[in-house]
Image (cartoon, rainbow, N blue to C red; front, side, top):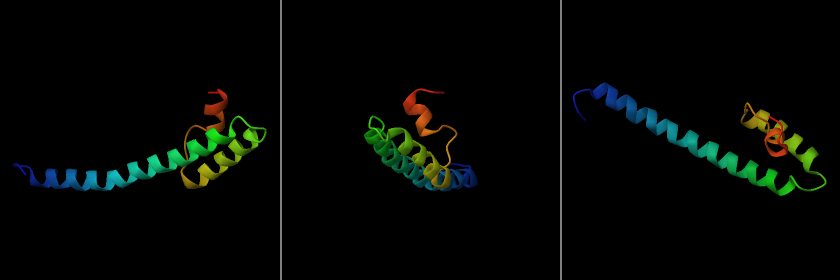
Length: 74
């Protein structure tokens, strides 16, 4: 543990609560990215990407929209 016990405990608690957030972000990114990748080249791709952006606004707000990233507009 070393000499700084409160600092070590704070680091352990911070790491413990950071890991689930990272896993949640990875899971949401994998699902949304997979869904957006499947529909982005189809006839309904633009409309579906707009709906994905609305869904992400409620679930996990991001500063960048999926439609902008896939269609090249930044």
